[in-house]
Length: 201
Image 1 (cartoon, rainbow, N blue to C red):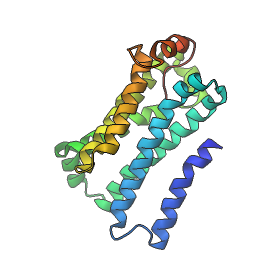
Image 2: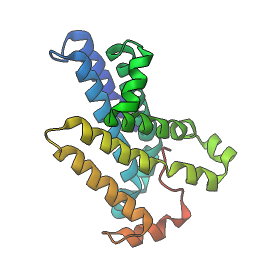
Image 3: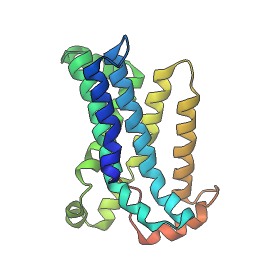
Image 4: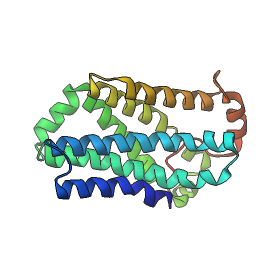
């Protein structure tokens, strides 16, 4: 159910694209809306375990995997729209953008980090890799989230408050996992010893 709900914004974006509801710059609107949802759902994925511990609602853990995978779907859509529609597959321009424009560099690295997490989000992958290696791999979600926030921060230029809010949330969640001083941090780290580290699962 959570996975289906997470796809609703994508359906809404598709409807707006088909009916002219994306405004005067439809391609830019597509890029920005898919990127915003990718980052938002990524942060939701990170927040599932801490919220579950604080609220005691253990069933929340069931949404972490589908929401994480859908976050990757939005991130991939974000990149594909940029490559296929905004740049028309002009490889030289795309490479130049990635190498010379910091916010695009950050976004591209974010997608690269999320790809193996999405690819190993199944129970079969956990068994194949082994719990320890799988947990270590899925710690990549934190640098991915931080780079995603940086991508957003460098993009907006004017009103940086939204990306700063995202940054504060991601850093707080990371502090909870590293047992650094923060509300609920030590309690969360101790209770986390029996379950996988934060992941795209």
